[in-house]
Amino acid sequence: MAANNSGDKGTRNLVIIMVAFIVVVGVVFSLISNRSNSTAAVPASVSAADGYGIVLNPNAKPTIDVYVDYQCPACRAFEILNGGYLNEVIAQNKAKVVFHPMTFIGPESILAANAAACAADENEFVAMNLAIFQDQSPNENSGKWQGDAMLNIGKSIGINSAKFEACIKDGNYVKWTGNVSAATAKANVNSTPTIFVNGKQLDRNTEYGDPVKFRAALAAGGVK
Amino acid sequence: MGDKFKVAQPWLTLLARLILGGVLFAAGALKIGSLQKSAMAVRAYELLPVSLANFLGYTLPWIEIGVGLLLIAGVAVRISGLIGAFTMLAFIIAIAQAWARGLSIDCGCFGGGGAIDPEDTKYLSEIIRDIGLLILGIYLYFYPKGRFSVDK
Image (cartoon, rainbow over all chains, first blue to last red; front, side, top):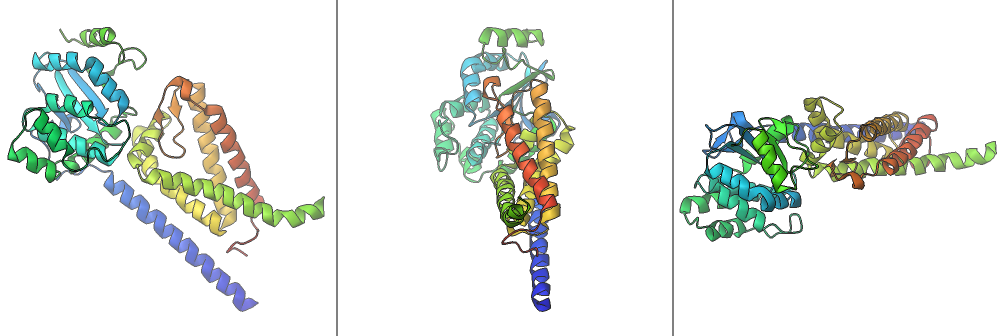
């Protein structure tokens, strides 16, 4: 009986040690993998000071920050509804616009964000951004964006360079998406899309889904 | 009555361990696939400083898995039950304050989480479920000895 008891005690300690090991390794791994990586390759238009976002019109004012995930249906709806006006603002240099492609929905968000960054290096970010949203699958991580999908989206808007192809195939900016995520976590962005004009968040209940109110909100923020 | 409870108690302890442990383990396991969402869900409660919320979002799933495993195996049941109960109490407070402040969030209990449409919130059912689990944790603190456990 005594021997039996000490055997149980050994099993008990072994279980506790194993569980503690799993928890500690998991915690350490999670904390490290969600940290910003200063050695990650970043697109030329990205600024660490702007939360690793892709910056368009760096010298214009005011600043508009756009947080999206390419697989988020509400972000697609926002792009279809308000993207046209936002792109007009960009084209006419009426604001500094910083895009933060988030990747919390999963692997295909990473592929899309990487592709958008590759397109930014070709000065085609705006067209690529729209084209990716237009190609969004109704299901998350459906497999639609695996393989050559992003390359083909790029070709559809006229990006044919070998550099772009290599950037997509090698996933040049995959690590950078981790930096964007770490920065958005610090910026306390909890849903997508989220738009800030000069650091002031637009009203989720009214200003995202109504083009007139969206325009008015940008005007109130100083977009002339 | 007393005798009947004496017979049933080890089985009730087993049941409580499997339910609370199973729920905790599942909740943790479903979150580790997307820790970004997990951190987002904690931030959405708007209860903790952002850096602490992110830390909790990345680490809590592993704690849930650990406590869940201990309860299922029946190891350190008393303390694991207490940690489980304490965790549930924290969730209840977090959900209740979100409800009271009129936030529209998903509890993020089993992955997902973050801001949602006001009509999609399920605060009452989430709180009732967590109160049930809290009671199981308290029961395990007082009656840790049960069937099929490594603890003797």
